[in-house]
Length: 299
Image (tube, rainbow, N blue to C red):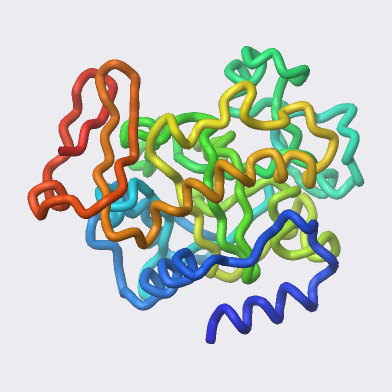
């Protein structure tokens, strides 16, 4: 069984923080269902690379955008994507800096949503890769034929909480950064060094060494109910454990969407949003999405 093997790998790795949790049954089944399928049926964007040497077969998948209100990354066949290491954001004075990010040769001193983080008034100016578990999600760029994807056009909120299945564990991370066109190829599958450490252990990852296997599942949740906001997370935490603990309750609530008997996602024009559990009608399950202003509505 794949999760038994992944769990064994996790046990052999260096001790991970206690706030990385076991994969609950519904998320494990979701993982199995995805990896038993050969391709995404509702591809939102394609043409991305998981790692150097790959073909551009990774996609942003919307197969469960309407029933669970989620978007995820996957590759072709039964593969998902890998986990490269990101060290962007605050570069000085981290209370958790252990030097491992110095191995990175492409670190930026700013994250995609620095202005929003600063506006929270939480005592920090930007994310700290050593403290904040975050995911690099979405692709920007203006190069010719460069593959791009803007999650906000599909209802994903900046700095919303995501779920990551990695190393036989479940970790929650903030969507806090995007991949640009400063590299040779449009890449996907990347997370902060603190998140990667929770997955695989401190001795397995650094600024230049991540997890190369395409077996990581990144799940983004639609809607404002996925936002911790200024007061729903300990943004001024001094360790990964502190921050992860502060978002655990929200994350546990969000993953209840997955594998439920059904639901109806809606994001209204008044900036309200809701995830309504229950069994939707067939029409609701297969209805088209309507773009109203800047909000996405599923009926």
